[in-house]
Length: 100
Image 1 (spheres, rainbow, N blue to C red):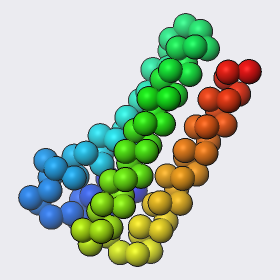
Image 2: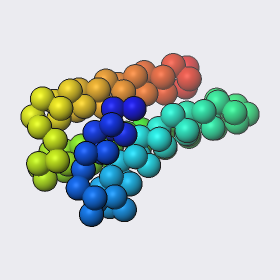
Image 3: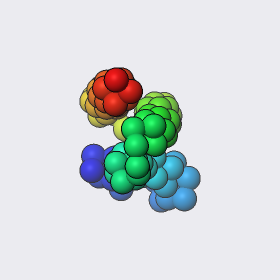
Image 4: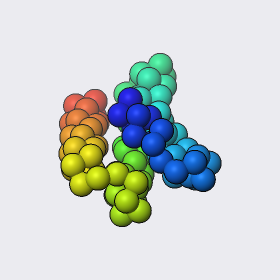
């Protein structure tokens, strides 16, 4: 939800660029987790968790890019970067647990 709030303040000429990319990446993470849970078997779940991890990595870069473009302040960037790193750590743990 924070990504949606933050990107609402981005320049309007970024609506179909960075704004859209960030929103798609953050929506893709839980969507892939949900899709993986709806599939049969652990291998399918792990596959979708890896896709979610890819979206989280994409979001991590896009947050950095938005900061570098000065679309967000240092404190907003630090907070979001920490949250994305924490999310990636949780995904890594979940992938390991499901593989066991």
